[in-house]
Image 1 (cartoon, rainbow, N blue to C red):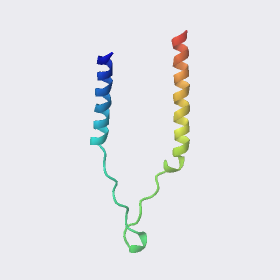
Image 2 (image 1 turned 45 degrees about the horizontal axis):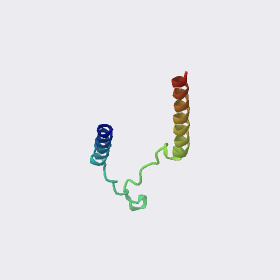
Image 3 (image 1 turned 120 degrees about the vertical axis):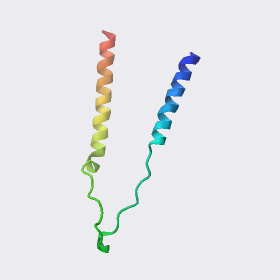
Amino acid sequence: MMNLLSKKTYSFLLVLISILSFAQSVPPPPENPESGDIGAYPASPIDAYTFVLFLVAITMIVYFAVKSKERILQ
């Protein structure tokens, strides 16, 4: 039991360190378009649908979890 807990702890730390080591800082906001510079970046098309994508992801997780549980019970 202790060995399994140790493996899970090491795995969690490995993932956490990987995420933190590849994290990038947020770039500064672009110049104001009125200043004569190039201006702001266009909005990403995914920004408007993040809530919908979140709901679809949760629905898919639940669907596949129930489907695999049914397959295990058979």
